[in-house]
Image (cartoon, rainbow, N blue to C red; front, side, top):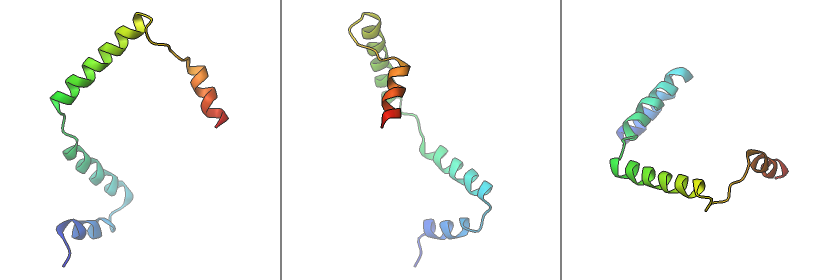
Length: 73
C-alpha cells in the first residue's frame, strides 16, 4: 500500500516541469519556518565577527586570493 507522499509523487511525475517547480517551492516554503532563537544567535555571531574584523583581530583574504585558490583546484 502506497503512502500519501508516494501517491502524490507519482501524480507529480505527470506534471509539466514548471508545475513541478512551483510545487517544490510551495513545499519548501512550508518547511522553511523562521526560528527566532537561531536568528538571534546568528545575528550575535555576525556582530562579533564584524567587531573582530574592524578591530584587526581577524585576518581577511581578498576576493582575488579566494578565487585564485579555487581556480587552481
